[in-house]
Image (cartoon, rainbow, N blue to C red; front, top):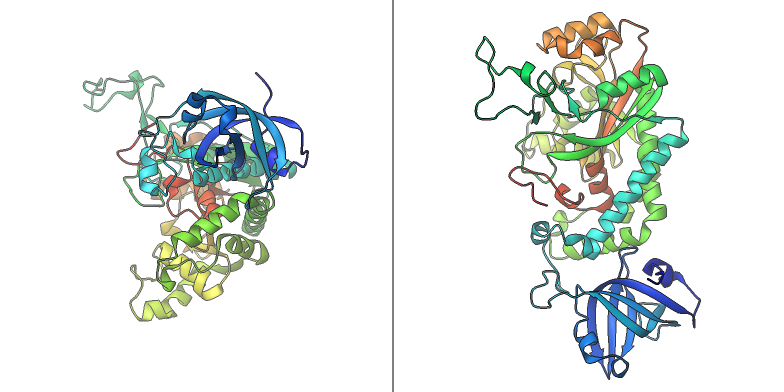
Length: 480
C-alpha cells in the first residue's frame, strides 16, 4: 500500500509537478466538459482537496462508483489550481475505490443537515465539516491541557472511576453492582446486602476525581486529573451530559488568590492555543455561526463573532469580586428592577446562568471570577471564612456560557471539616481516608474543576453540549 500524504500537507505544498498519493472520503463530485471534479477530505483539515479526473482516462464503472461518501485512493500530479477557492489540485492518473456508498441511501448528502438529525447518525457525523472541526479542536485542547500542566511541574494523577464516596454530596450517581437486580441479597435489616457485592460495599461511577486528587497533592504538591465523570441527573438541557470529562488540578500551599491566578492563566493559555493552532477550524465555525444567525433578530444573535469572542478572553484581565458584591449589582440591575430575570436574585440563592451572563456580558463586559459564596450552597470540603457565613469558593464566568470553572480553597482544619460533614449528615465512614489527611501533615491547599465539554462548547461556539462530544450520553440515550 503506497504511503499517502495528508490533505492538510498537500494544500500547503508547492511541490508542483510531483506525483502524490492521497486517500480519503468523497464529499462531492461533479462533471463538466468530460472532466470529473472530486472534493476529497481525509479529516486532517477542514478544507477539501480537489481531484481532477479526465473522464476518458478512467473506466466508466470506476467513475460511476465515485459518489458522496465513497472512500478512494488517488495517485496523481500535484498542480497549481486554475479554479477559485484553492491553490492546488491533483490531476488524477489512477483511482482505486476502497469502499462505495449507495448514493440513494447515504445519509450525509451534500446539503445542510440539522444538528438534531446528525445526532441520530453520530457514527457518521464526524465526516461532516462541522464535526470534523469540533473533534480536531477537542484533540488540540486535550493536548494543550496536558502540555500546560506538564510544563509547570504538575503530575498527572489517575483517579478511580469506580468509587465508594460522593465527592459533591449530591447523591446523583450511577450505581456499580454485580448483584441480581431482581432478587438482590438482603441483610438482617431488610435492605440490600452490599457486603455480597463485587467490592463488598456500595459503589458508584465517580462524579469527580477531586477528593483523590487532594490526596495526591498532599504528597506531590501539584497534581491534576483529566478523566471521565458521571452524573445521573435527569436533565435534558443543552448544557448537561450524563458522561463528560473533567480537568481537576489540586495544589498544596495554594490559597484562594493563587487558585484564581492559576485558573485565569490556564484558560487564557488554552484559548490562545486554540487561536494559534486551530485557526482554520475556528474560522470555519465562526462563518457557520454567522450563517446560522442570519435570520435571527439582532438581539438574538451572538454579541461577538467566535474568533472575536476568543480574543476577548485572552485580551482582558478577569474581573474579580465577591458573591455578595455580585448579588448587590444584580439586585440593582435593570433586569431585576423590571422583573426580567426568570429566577429572582437575593443573598443566599445560587446564581443562575442568566445572572452570570449578565455580569459578564452586560455589566463588566469581560470574564468574571466570583468568590466567597454562602456556605449553605457550596460543598462540604470548602474552607470556611471567618464570618461563619461564606466559604472560599470561586467560580469563573465566561460570555455566552456562564460558569466554566468552579473551585475553592479546601478546608484543611480537621475539626471544621469534621463538623461540616456531621452538619450535612454525610456518611463519615466513606470519607475516613479523606479526614485522615487533615490529621497527618495537613496543609493549605486549593483546586478547581473545568468541564472539558463546557470548554469545547465555548471554543467552538456550538450551542448544544451534545455536539462537542463524539457520542453523547443523556437520559434515554446510550446509542453508539
